Structures are given as C-alpha cells and as structure tokens.
Image (cartoon, rainbow, N blue to C red; front, side):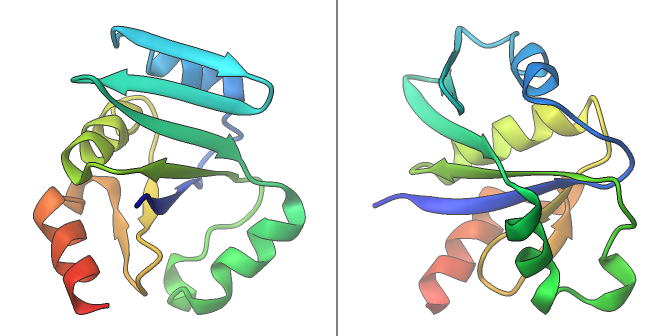
Length: 125
C-alpha cells in the first residue's frame, strides 16, 4: 500500500524540471508525462505537481501561521518506504525551503520529517 506526502515549496516557484534536477544525483530519475519517478535503494517515489484547485484544498487544515503566501509550488509524493520518502524529501530540502504535509494532520518543516514520525502517524490511523 502506498502513502502520500504533500510537498510545499513556499518561497519560490519550483518547477518539475527543478525537482528532476535536484533528484538527479540518484541512480535513476525519470519523467513520464506528469509523473516524476525516482529510485532510491531499489525503491521508488512518485511525484506529481498539484494544480491550483488542489492547492487551495491542501491548506484547509494547516495551522494559519504555516500557510505560505503565493506563489508556491506543491507536489504530491507517493511512497511505500518511509525511509526512501525521507531521503527524497531531504534531497529536495537541500535545494529549497520545503514544508511537508504528512496527510495525517501533521505539517512539518522538511528538516523535522523522519521515518519514525511517518510510521508513528500511520500506526495511529
């Protein structure tokens, strides 16, 4: 079963090309249509840029002080391995400020995202 993170780049407009370049240090990063696939340790994460309508809905449960001013870039990332998801998030966060919505009512700066946090949130559901 896959899980989803929402990745928000609040400080600037990040493009699909940026994400591909930033993950390019990995063994394999490909783009098929709108989907970016990154392989880490023989496991994959899949990223898709969110459209403007989805973005408004994303922030509906965020703490007000964490909602960024536009323009922002928002991507959803599907993953099966929490460790691989965290690795990908950390790689992206080295290039641009990033906030992560875990989809479990938890919004954290990328630097605070850990595999144990994701696993504990999943266990509560």
